[in-house]
Image 1: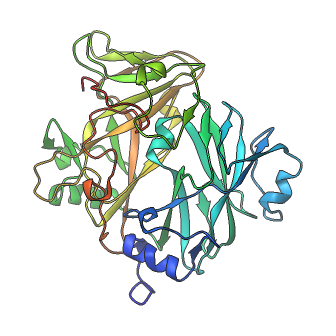
Image 2 (image 1 turned 180 degrees about the vertical axis):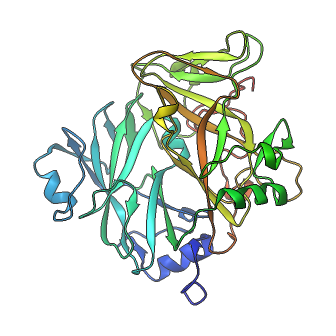
Length: 379
């Protein structure tokens, strides 16, 4: 990349297109379509088959993924005409895309937003590397996706995209001091339609977001997954009644809710988030020392999410995927529960998240995925 040889940052859409032309990201006989290129990521696609596994695993530095699979797989599933993946069963799917990265370019993968909102746990595995979702600089080889449906069985097929890939070069993370400066220059976080003052911004290697769980007793502040629902076909949009899969969650007096253990909840952040063209963001896994819950299984926020150059939109609220562990756990309104890590782009993205790309969650006021009928959540 002529201008990108010594640049530092997350690759924007235009640099990702160049990376595909150079076959740093390739897909053999399958063409990578332009619509697969997002503002700061590339959609990855499921291959023709999946292995059903008896347990999850990571390869060591001396083994390939397929060498490890030999002793763990007990069934091969054909995905070409579609197949149902069972709840709580790990599957491993070779992805269509493969990598041939330069020595100074690394990659990171995360589930797509709709994948996380359905409680489908995904993470990428690569040969001779004992880390999930982190792909070392210079990696050359196949990509494999571990898929674990948690709340619902899901139907998938070859070519479906459940996760995304980012490319980056150099140190890209914004310092807390720079985050505060940006909040004053181009607000990243809003509350009640106003930018959060710099002095009140909660930062620690990223920006903290809190819950919105207040309001009258009949206000829906979230949803919790029902057990034993029918499978969800991930290729269908607005095809299902939400009430067949979810129960509404209402606030208790004083602005709080009690999470039942091992039940999946979808909630919304109290804050609106605005990601400008020169910044990319990633939801970070929650620190378990702050309570017996897991918030958000990570996810990318592309440049343009909640962003309005006119300044009239106070960001878009973030959907939060929450599960309590072991015991019931109370969460209260404005309780910090997750953190956004912010990263510099190598250059401002030419394609921004939003209406022009057909983005599903710009300006969202509900948290259910695109697979369900439109609903008004009272938020």
